[in-house]
Image 1 (spheres, helix red, strand yellow):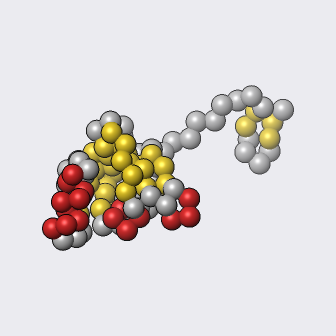
Image 2 (cartoon, one colour):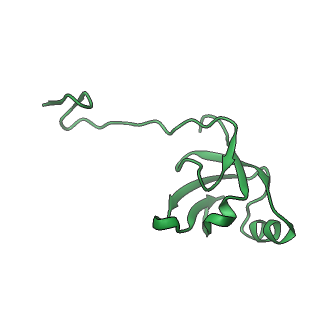
Length: 101
């Protein structure tokens, strides 16, 4: 059976590529599942210290795993360790795509 709205065949597995990123954007809005590089951290000493303690520094490669519902925290994989950071803190982290994974 072919589904006309998607053009897929019943039982067929559809592989979707991760969205491409150009330029920088905040970690809060970055696509999930895509390798990202921390481009900058916009905040004072306390913000930088908190993110540094979590392993999030400029140049670090990370990946958004999931976002909590209703403005909940952003779950991020940093070097094999998953950390949850609030949306406000995630907004202060500028990230860019790293290219093909």
